[in-house]
Amino acid sequence: MLLFLSLLGIFLSVILLYFNARKYTSSIYLGAFFFLVSLYGFIQYSILYSKSVVLVSIVFINPGFLTYLIGPMLYLYVRSVLTDQARPVKSDLGHLVPALIFLLASLPHLFTSWSYKTALAARLIENISNLKVIKASLLYDFIPVGIIFMSRPVLVVGYATVSAVLFIRWLKQNKNSEVLSHQRYMVQWLTVLLGFLFILAICQLVPITGAYMTGDLDFFFALEVLQLISGIGLAGLLISPFFFPAILYGMPRARTVTPHERNPGTPRDVFSAEGPARPKYGFESDYLADIRDRVERCMEELQPYLKQECNLAIVSKLTGIPSHHLAYYFREEKKQPFNEYRNEWRIRHAKKLIREGKSKELTLEAIGLLSGFSTRNTFYTSFKKAEGISPGEYLGR
Image (cartoon, rainbow, N blue to C red):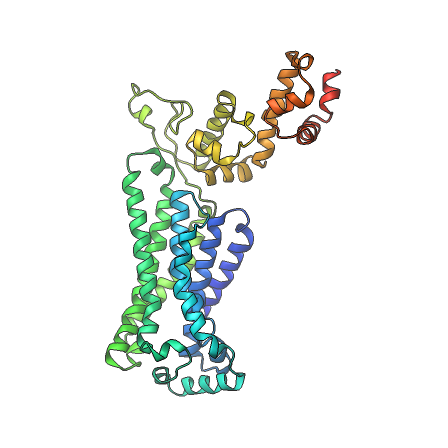
């Protein structure tokens, strides 16, 4: 069971990263999280249950440092989803410290001979209690082996707790805002994700702690109920994405009534998240239509495309729509890159200036610059791509 779930998790994480990492940075964190959780399960299976000298020789100590990244990947994913800021900052380097320490302490073992590693593996297979006396890491000279094994689930529980606190604070801050109504789907997903992770991590921590406190590693295998619950937690964690496929794009399912709709006397700004009065929505397609309307109003009335630095982040700020929602809309619904959509508005504006006779006062290059293009070449290239003719040919008509 553990082997099957671990291999399934590794496969799913690879698929997730392959299809989404280039489009959505948060998917990198999520895919890495699932991969590391599955790797931890595979390492545990190999050492405790496989009875394979080859497997134990490969996974004992060598890849262990990676499992210290489970918590950081979870935290970075939750933070990126809640704040719409997926890029790491310098302070995030601190999350790598435990993994780096374990890696450096394990380097001597990493470069030992294969025969030495297989000898250690044979000792572990013969008696798992030899974990207490085998010092394959420099850390074992300073820290009891039980503390080292406890450190992984302790860190996971700690990061899961911090992520849950971040999540709860976000819910409190947005409980009366329309943002929360747009994110019901995401709220459900994070609740399931954190819930199953807590179950898994605690069910791992309790028997490891008991084995360390009693000095008997067989204690880990004695708590069969916890082992069963742990398996359920791992299975739920790995299967849950199948029930939340849209979360890969950060998309919500529904939109609810706005403050103006609840109180018709409340003033509204057409560029705010409220927008014009609309009926209560219950499906994703309605929210996508709402995104379309708000983006169109923004482009028509605020004309952000006239600024050379116009991008998704600027449109997101003007419309109140999270940028990853906009990215989803343009890719999956509109089937058009945002840059191409923005250039269409610029070209429309340039054509308007030409029709108004501005070409008698300005060069075509100047008209392109006034329309938001940064250079003459981009203006001419985009114009010809959209209209099939050059700006000069359009002017001569």
